[in-house]
Length: 428
Image: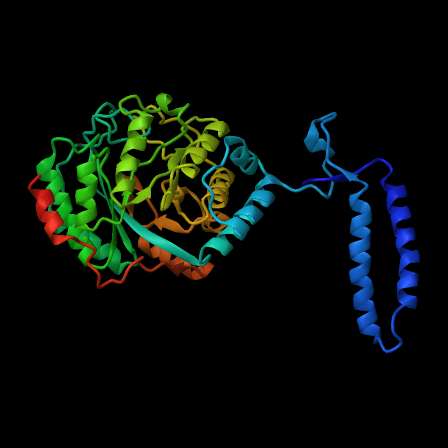
């Protein structure tokens, strides 16, 4: 709890110290003549600290709201919510009963305090120098029927992006091989679809892609829009590591960004993925015009899922000409730090991914994000259709910052596929 001294703090401290000087003289008189000077000094200092704290504790009182609110009354004894919750997370581990107010208090902590305590949790819960490298490839670009206000792949907006068919297997596998050679351990495939219903042929092709890339010793992730329970199970049998389905923003702000898919439909997809035994990858985007309360709401939803997402991508909006959000102001690095550190404190075991928009941030700015708790990135020239940091630039950054590439979460000789299950899925 945070405390501050009452108005008579000077008299209190003087009285307490005088009292303890007298007590100390008696204590010294009782010391054995065989006690060495260093032993005596150590005992005296330990005794003095205990006595002084006990005496002062009875004279301390919690801050009360007054002019300027409770915050104005805090003194050097004050403790931020980030400090309190970080300490609890380190001691007790992940929790799933966060209240929105608790997360807001963490998020609202002074940014340097939040950065520091995010780093503390990161060091306690993760190998803090390890950073996962992922590559994201758009295997089916453009022509999406949805109206996501930020997305250049929507058929509703004139962004100059032409719709393309599903990439063939050879092209996808070649891209995966290049990503692995460059250091990526996870290969993600994205398709611009609302859902996979009625796409049996394409879906079965993707199952083959997953199976072969998994056989290369890489983790495999897909983001294909909404999927059904049976499709999640088929992806699991093919060897899929993770499925990405972002919530984008808070439930309250969501209708301002998307109207063609409900928030509950997104949560339902996450449930199917989780029940199939696939790792959930889910995060959001900041810079959509939302309030800070909406950012807190997004983190609250993620932190109170039945299990925390294995990966939490934090995206900064990349405003694309032709989309409704083309004129949005760019996100500042401090906003990213707040999101990353709060995510780290509330979801300590998750991979917190520094995702879209990273290309705008300098290496020192990215270093602050890693310090705050980010431990995963997308690397490669593009993120679906927008610019991204290339492999060479990221390798140079890793070298300068002393970062270590994270190895796959499995033995590279394991295929992770269920041959019979794949055959059964293909016949569905």
